[in-house]
Amino acid sequence: MRKYIYFLGSLLIALSFFVSLKAEAAPGTVGTIAPDAVYKVNIIAYETCPRQENAQRIAVLADFVDDVDTGDTFVDLDKRNKIFLVPGTDFRVLDSNACDSDGALLQLAPETGTEYEVWVRLVGPPDSRIDAYLCARDPNQATDDIVCSSTHLMKTRLTGKGQPSFTNATNHLLDINGTPLFDEDLQDYFWVWNTVGKPHAQVWIIDPAD
Image (tube, rainbow, N blue to C red; front, side):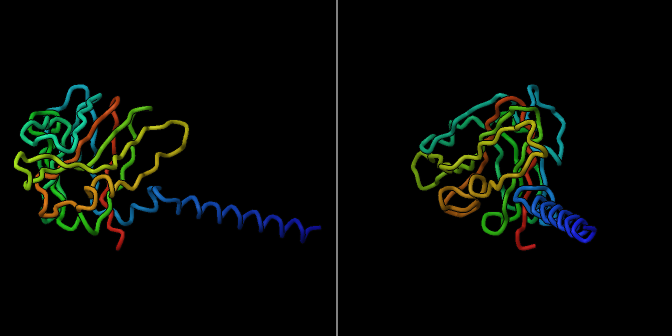
């Protein structure tokens, strides 16, 4: 009887250890992607945007929706809640205010379009939401039309589900229907960052090769 109880106890311990490992290895958990993170930035929605620059945060307007469609002209673009992307030797926020007339400016390493991934999670108020996607100007069109990804990152901050998980947003934020970020066929790449409520998004750049 004692041997049976000992065996059963050992089995339960082993099962709990296995379940723990499975939980730690679940896609989108902090523990699985943190070792490969090369850059982190917060994109936070405010009713009244702060005026101070902040290298760790990009400010966007709360409850702001501007549906940018393929065919819209770049000259008529409302640049609020737009985060313009430029290549550089490292990752950094160059202009942290996306609430004004010229949008925000985020520098990404040139390899981002092909080798890196973007993961996003929401940690802000319950039921806050984002609808984010990548667009760019098409210089081949006489009117400099805008083209946008057909896939959007649509994410809602849920409650009662434990720790918020990350979502792999690479296809939404680093690619426009097969054209990778910073490809020379397009210019003036930018993220559209629509909000419902005041979402707080944590955006992590991941190098899966690490």
